[in-house]
Length: 222
Figure 1: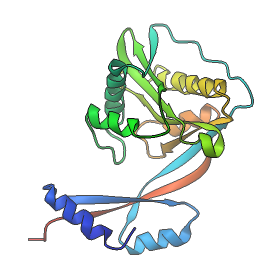
Figure 2: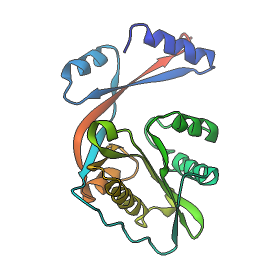
Figure 3: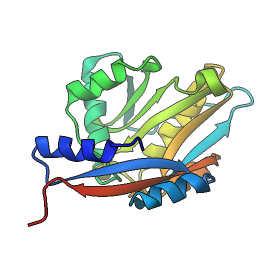
Figure 4: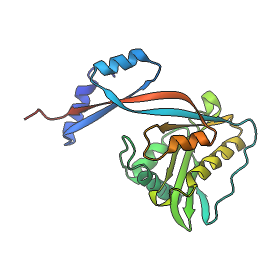
C-alpha cells in the first residue's frame, strides 16, 4: 500500500459521512515478504481467492438446455439490466460486495477494453431471470483463455443445476472461439459451494491470492 494511503482513505470516508472505511489488499499466497509487510501495517486475513483453470484441447460439446430455460445474450439493454439484477442479488452476501446501480455497473464494464456483451448470457426459467454468466477477454492476450468474470444464480433458483449448466455453456463457447482454456476467480469462503462446483467440473487451482483487510475509524474516539 502506498505511503499516505490510509490517511487519504480515512479522510475520504469522513467526507462521505461514513464512521469507518475498510481497506483490502491482495497478496499472493507464496509472497511471504508481502504478507509480513501488510501484517505490520495492521491488516488481518479476510478471505482468499483461487484462480481456477480448465484446458480445452479441442471442441467442447455444449450442454443441453434444461427444460423451461431460455438463454439471451447481452447486446440489449433489457437483458443487461436483468443480468445486473441477478448479479446484485446473487452476490449480496459475498465478501466485500457493494451494491451499485445499473448505470455505474454498465459504465464500468463498457469502459473495459476486454468487455464483450455477447459473452453475457442470461438464463430465464419459465420467463423469469434466474442466473447469469458474464465473460470477457481479460486473459486472451496473455494466456489465450476465456475468462468468467461473474457466475450468479438467484437464491430461489439454486439447487437446480443452473450454475453448472452456465459454466459448461461458457466452456463450450470459449472452445468455439478457439481459446486454449477458461479461467475464473472464486472466493474460497463463498456463501455457496462454488469452489466444489468448479473442481467437479474439471477446473483446477493455478494460483491462490489472500485478501487482507483493515478497518479504519474516520472519527476520533469519544
